[in-house]
Every structure is written in C-alpha cells, then in structure tokens.
Image 1 (cartoon, rainbow, N blue to C red):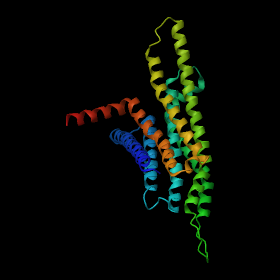
Image 2 (image 1 turned 120 degrees about the vertical axis):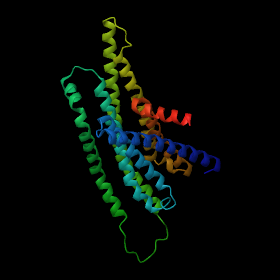
Image 3 (image 1 turned 45 degrees about the horizontal axis):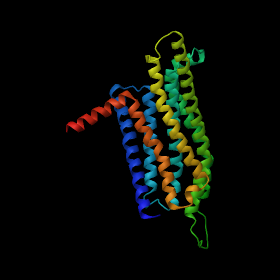
Image 4 (image 1 turned 60 degrees about the horizontal axis):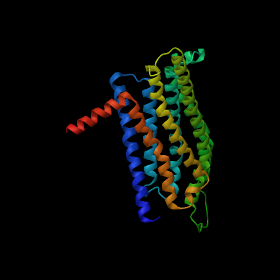
Length: 298
C-alpha cells in the first residue's frame, strides 16, 4: 500500500468510526436517559436503543480486531462470529423500525392493517426477539465449524507454513453467504415498506385532487417526512450489499489497500444512518440542538 493512499484511507475510516461512535452513542445515551427518567420506553425508542447498542458493539469489535493482539493473527477469527451476529442484529432493528414508521403512517382501509396498528407496540419487541432467535439458530452450524477448525491437534512435526491468515479469510468467506441472505431479506423488507408508503401517498394525493383540496396537507407532509429517510436507507443498503458481494468474490483481497476500501464501504451505513436518525427524529434533534447551543454559548 502506498503511504499517501494508506494515510488517506485510514483517515476516512477514522472519521467514519468517530461519526458512528458519536452518533450511535448519542442515540443510545438519549434513549436510555429518557427510559430511566420516565420508567417506560416507546417502541420506536426501544428499536433505536437496540439499534445503537448493536452498532456500538459492532464498531468496537471491528476496532479491537485491528489491535496488534488480533491483527494478522488467528485470534481475529474469534471476533468474526460476534461481529457478524451484531451486524445482523442492527439490520433487523433497521427493518423493524422501517416497518413501524410505515404502519403508523399509511392509511389503507384494511382490517389486517388496522389490527396491526393497534397491536404493533406490543408486537415489536416480540418480533425483534424472534428475528434474533432465527439469526442465532442460523449461525449455530458456522459456530460449530469454527470450533472444529480451531480444535488443538497433536502434531509431531511443526508445519512449515503458517496458514492463520488463510484460515481467517476462509472463515470470513463462509459467513458471507449467510450475511448476504439476511441482508437481502432486510433489504426487501425496507423496499416493501417504502413501496407501501409511496402507494399510500399516491392514493392520498389522488383523493385530495379529486376533492379539489390542496395536496400540501399534514398527512402528505408526514408521508414525505417518513419516506425521505427510508429512501436514503435503501441507498445505504445498496452500498452495503455491494461491499458484501465484492468481498464474496474476493475482490478486496487482491491488494492490501482494497481491504480498507471494503471496510470504509461497510462503515458508511451505520455512520450516515445514525446522522439521519438524529436529524429526522424530533426528540433527538432537539437534544442535539440544545447541546450545540450550550457549546456555542460556552
């Protein structure tokens, strides 16, 4: 890796790490403080808390893997399983958060939708728990493979070549198909939520025009307010899926500098999405604005 490119790549990655730590740490702190203060947590804040916590743990696992103790060592494979699981947990939280906003906003006259609107607050924690159980069960065969591959074996002759890095890459490649599968499922869920919002908005605007009413009413504004972050989330999902596919093809392993590009592409999602959540959530945006005003006065 050339020094200028390496410095530039590490600088971008460091900035993304700082943004992700700050944004998700801020969300987690605010939601937990509200919970401790009010002794209750709305479903949206519950999902935000789980999402920010899983992303913080994922990022910390990533940063630890770059320490000299783990970097270029077979021990880095130990961090792979929790990293993949936490990453999948954050994607499930994003999906259920999109479903929550979608169900609350769309106005279809459907009995199933009305039933879901009334019970969504109680169902969300259970649905998230079921999703996590499914992910955990899916990971069990890979955990067993990891355990079998890392069993100590008695050898009378020392191997002439150290295959630790090759074992790490092999374990990572084995997890990628499972990651792509769950990521595609979550991506499809977000697409469905966005399409439902688009259809709901189109029907609402059409009815307003038929009645000769202005299309800039409160319901239209709510639809647009929810739809914009969902569309940006879909773009971030596409970038994330592209990075996983490139990793599956081994593109990032051709050169050392390309592995940093892959890390940057993966880190963009939790970093940018945290800023979007803060900006689009009135409570989080209000706390952030208050903190910035305090700093400016100081």
